[in-house]
Amino acid sequence: MNIDRTRDIAAMLLHAARRRKLVTYQQLHALFGRGEPLHSRYRALEDAARSLSDCAALDYGCLMSLDNGLPGDDFFNRFRRGRPREYEKVMGFASAGRSTIKKRLIAEAERRRVFEHAARTAASVNAGDWIGEPGNARVSTRSVQQGPTEGWNDDPLAHATVGKTTARPAMSALSCRGAR
Image 1 (cartoon, helix red, strand yellow):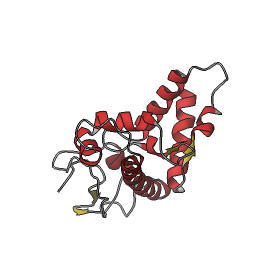
Image 2 (spheres, helix red, strand yellow):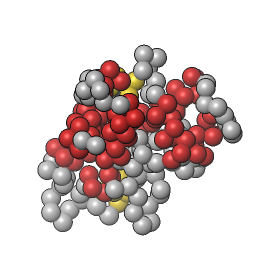
Image 3 (cartoon, helix red, strand yellow):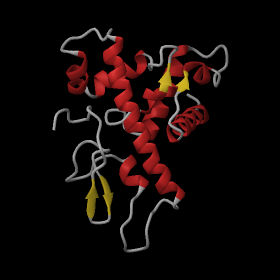
Image 4 (cartoon, one colour):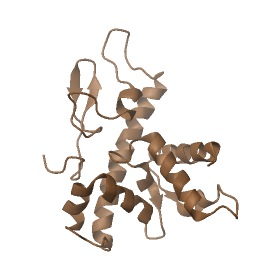
């Protein structure tokens, strides 16, 4: 596996997220040589998405787009494995996952969460990784990217820690914990 290629895919996904855009599979495949097998391309995509966030909590792979505007089966398979309750809540128990309307609900909710995450990490990185004055309220990209810590909700986007207070951004209808 080419680490540079995985890094390029991660950069492409993050760039798209910060601009609230999608990435076509054609753009992904353009990064590979003609002889590169599909399974290694999709493994690189999954590794890139995992490098940006734990896919069981937040999956940057949702930014991939087929001609119909939806991510491919690679995203929905990761989503079903990583968040089975959330998947079943939308798709239905033991669903074959063929409903385009329901897939769109999952993809749009996940994309909103990714866009919010990218905006928060961009704001933090643009401020030199820490926002605020030393000893004052701060937000770190590390706390968002590493996911939940002790005492946190298991949804890494449910809370953004700001100093000693906790700010809660507006959440989509779908969340890692399901109904609250």
